[in-house]
Amino acid sequence: MKFPMTRQRLQKYRVDEALSAEIKKGVLEEIQKICKGVEEVVLTTNERKYIYEITLPVKYGECLPSATTYGKVTRVTHNGIVTELLEEIKNKFPDSTIVMDPLGKYILIDWS
Image (tube, rainbow, N blue to C red; front, side):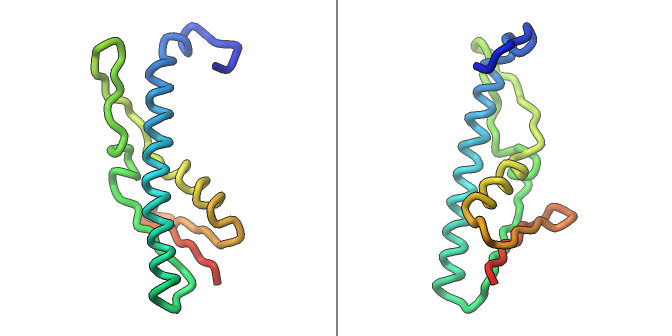
């Protein structure tokens, strides 16, 4: 917990922590897919870039399940994990050029 804590943050703490854990899990799963894709490109082609297509569940948070609060299931609205995913890609490929297209359909990782 990070202090100071407002009443509102205390009341939503469990839901927020559950959502945070699900976001981390979703990012980890997508990063594993991206790393496998990059490895496949490196091993099987002469290309020096990888294009990751952003799926609708990743873009709109549909990959995040509903949160359970005190035995009740409530749908947590979230704008997806794209921002977190971009940060993690930048950490995994620090000196590569990483660009997301303006329409948010793909992320380009270029190591040329």
